[in-house]
Image 1 (cartoon, rainbow, N blue to C red):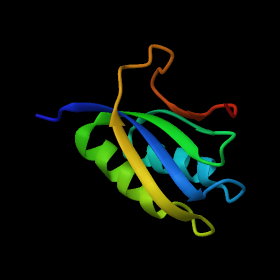
Image 2 (cartoon, helix red, strand yellow):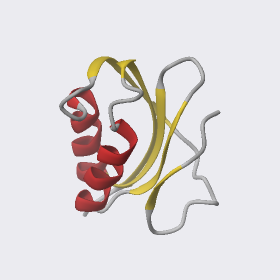
Image 3 (tube, rainbow, N blue to C red):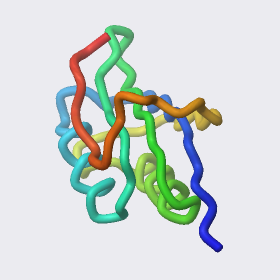
Length: 96
């Protein structure tokens, strides 16, 4: 049985201006994870992820590495309530 997991990721470090969001969308699509990713005005990146637990865990592990130019300091993972605006895809959202 593959349990569905929903998490909010907060990624800090040098993660803006390095293609982080684009790379995360590609990784999430490969893993079959739904959700979104966006920059935050404080310089971090935030992502809502939902999917099979093994895929969400794999995306969180990817988030620790990020794209080649990123320098990730921390990935904070918190359980999240479902976001009804998320359908069956993974997309970039505007900065908040």
